[in-house]
Image 1 (tube, protein in one colour):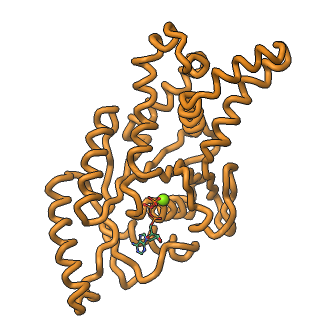
Image 2: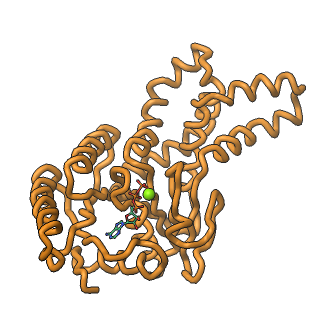
Image 3: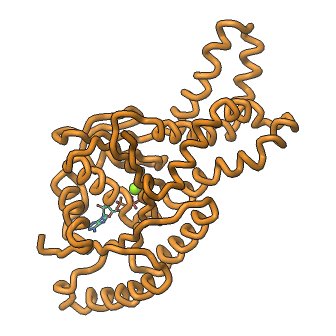
Length: 295
Ligand SMILES: Nc1ncnc2c1ncn2[C@@H]1O[C@H](COP(=O)(O)OP(=O)(O)OP(=O)(O)O)[C@@H](O)[C@H]1O
Ligand SMILES: [Mg+2]
């Protein structure tokens, strides 16, 4: 059995977490063992699912087949360093362990540790579908660019005795795992990139930029979700009518500038929090590709 993956990306605050949760719940409730992972250093899956989650895989209450994890970058870096240091403590004097520990203390190691943790999900067993709720776009692209950077720089770093030396040695050991993760990321049959955008100038510009950066690392996006559209029936008040006219202008612009299949999500009269609301978003997104506010 192979696992499928979805990445939900977009500018800060556009609705990534809400939509990632909705996609995950929808898949779990349609029979797939599903995991939602957030790589956002300021995660809020716990708030949306209204239960503690944290750095360990946690079952979501009252939903079969759905678990979640909020990856903590500091714990990830610490766990990664410990994995290499623990066996050394058995065989080396403390001064030598301290030298290796210093090599592994660089920000470079923290980046590698994040990617290593991320790559582990591509080796997961017993899970049909993994949804990644990502941090605002720059972070995701950086994560995906890392393996390309390594390929370019690995030899130079090793030769130069650079402060990344500790991390580079470990990368070489795990190279096959990273290559498998990158291959899965680039396989559109296995991995979908979904972009959430609001019909406003800056989220559109940022989405366009990120899409071209992703293309450079060999990844093509699957679809766009245009979120936060003001329902027409609410546009009797001039304030909302004017805003909706602005949105219509940007929706046209989105279709012109970003040629991806798209779905629209209206602005609900409640925040997306708790299973009922998350379910409502999932149902809406999966109904003929469009939603109506009357659900
Ligand atoms: N269609 C919608 N209708 C009503 N509220 C929404 C909708 N989409 C998102 N929200 C609300 O907007 C806020 C921001 O959404 P969310 O946290 O999903 O965005 P995000 O892109 O994950 O933000 P960040 O970049 O900070 O992680 C939340 O309070 C959420 O409940
Ligand atoms: Mg979020």
